[in-house]
Image (spheres, rainbow, N blue to C red):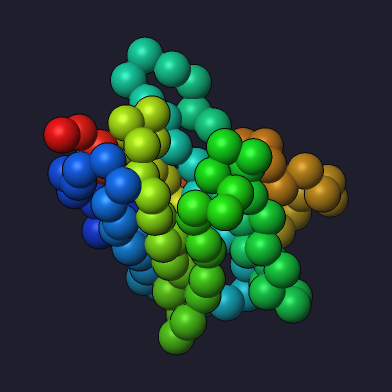
Length: 124
């Protein structure tokens, strides 16, 4: 059972990237999937989540209107547009903890499987 984020890179301010989250050994479609990010020297912060039930999407205020989460063919994507230097971070995808009964999808405890992250660097 593994989870892998990919698609990061170096991009200029205002640029875009498409991050992907893929799983091996299980099906992502059965879970809520979240994206988090961690900048150097800072705590990991929640970015976005997509529901397994109806595909509802949720975003942190800092990325609303610029980032779009989606799922297709058992992968989850995070389209990141209008990137700013403050978006520089390692981005992680995470799988819902199916044994957790809370609804706080914006917290780390909502998830129990994390993949290796992908670095996004926004710089001119």
